[in-house]
Structure formats: C-alpha cells, structure tokens
Length: 352
Image (tube, rainbow, N blue to C red; front, side, top):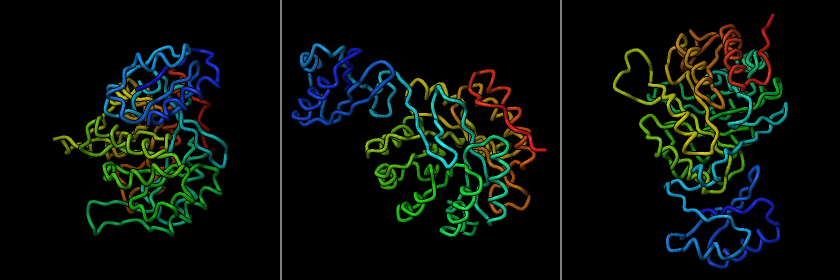
C-alpha cells in the first residue's frame, strides 16, 4: 500500500503521519520523488481501509494498494517514478537510471593475473567504460573448470581500480566472502546461478553496496523481481537488474537466448535500473556488437561487455570476449546509437 502526499506537503505533517502509522504496527518508508513524496507501507495492510488512512490528513492525495507480489520492486511503489542507483567510483559518482547516460561495464570473465587485468582496465577506460567487470570467484558448471583465483584476485582488482579509476563489479558466490568482496567492489554482483539463493540475497541486502542481480537461466520475470524483492526487503534499495540470456530449446547457434523484450517489460513493471549483458546472452563475440546496439535502442540503462586481451587463451568464456581493439570500435558504434536516443554522455575516445 502506498500513500501519495500532495505537492508541498509540510515535512512536519509527513512525520506526524509516519508516527501514527508506526503506532498501528506498520513500517512507513518515505520515498521522495521529483514532485511528490510517497509513503510506502510495509506490514499487514490487507485489512486496512484506504479511506481510514485518507482521513489521517488533508495533505494525503490518495491511498493505493500495490497489486503485484513484489511490493518494493514495483514501479507503482514509487508512484510511477524510476529510481536511480548512485555508485561512487574513484573517478566520481556514476548514476544508473532511466533518465541518465548509458553506463558501460567491461572486462574479462575472470581475473587471471595483474598484467592482464590492469592492461584491460586501462584499455576499456580509454574507450569510455566506467566500470571494470572481472570475476575473482567463478561459478562454473564443471567442478574441473577454472573457478577463479579467489581472494588473491580481489587484490588484483583493487590494483586495477587504483590504476584506472574505474568502479569494480565482481561476483559473490558465498556469504562467507561478502565482507572482503565489499572492501574492493563498488557493485556486488549476484550471478544467474545464485539468483534464488535467498539466504545470500538477504545478506547482500543487509549491506550498503549496490547490488547487480543477474536473471537466472530459467527464471521468469516475476521470479527475478521477487528475488530483487528479497534484497530490497532486507534494507538495500540500490538494485540493478541484469538480463544475461535465458535457456531455450535452441543452443546450437547461441549460448543462450538474449531476452531484449525485458527492457520495455521491466520499464512497465519496476522502477529499478536495467543492464543488458550481450556477451553471456549470445556466447559468441561476433554477435555481441549487434545485440549491444539493439539493447541501447530498446532503452537499456547500462551494458556489460566481456573484453579480454587474448580471448583465444582466456581461462573462461574466451569465445564471447571482444579484444580491446574490437571494444574500441564497438564503443564508437554504440556512441552513434546512444546519441540518437539521448543516452550518451560523451563520445568514446579512440586510442592512437
């Protein structure tokens, strides 16, 4: 249930309503929008009469029930307004959101050594990326595949962050590792295989760093939004949703099926920012540029693209990784689409 306050409602009146509703055993959450303040009500609201709440104050414009099961993730919860996730990086604040410039994260699937990760960070930064993605801990289908270097890779990510000024996005697989990952990461990623690891979702929701939640390989959109609800309900409002491809019956030509239809669907259902990962979505580097451009045209807020200095020798996901040179060219191509839809902050910088 949400309470929409009239424009110009006095702060003292909003606080008085909060106190009254708290005395009813509810938890009011104040959401400050561009034009109005909305109070979200958390708790047992099924038996509440909206008219009873309406009578609390002449400053209340309307009282609405949130129909979706994902309450906090619902766009209705913010009275139709999009939310923004602000991430503080060494180079300054970067904002993910519907009305913000496109954000690009790029880097290798996994951190292999210092020279590789630092050089990749420098190259993607020069091309226009603002985040470095790289796995320290890697969930793999086979127990015999490379699982990442773990804690030592976090030190290498910290070094790349220091040298490049990029923000860091890296994955947490186990709540035991969360604190040490949070010391390095600017955004903590929950991968597709852990999308419904509810105990992990609660843990990342209880810490303050922004969370990138990837869609599970067989997850419906509602499954995904309910997973986001776990994080939001645990106290962390800074969630970014990442589409990375789903499993369908055809895996001969692409690794997964990249569901670009989620962009307009999510825009209707939720206020949370959206990221598209075309690298995992298609699995082959030759298809990544087309899907990245299509994602911008569809209205995504951000992109995650895998880049490796030598994809043929990558320890994981080499076939879907672009070379730094190809990424340079792609950023020039993305700039054309981004400018056309008003989502490009500045032109990408070509390296000499």
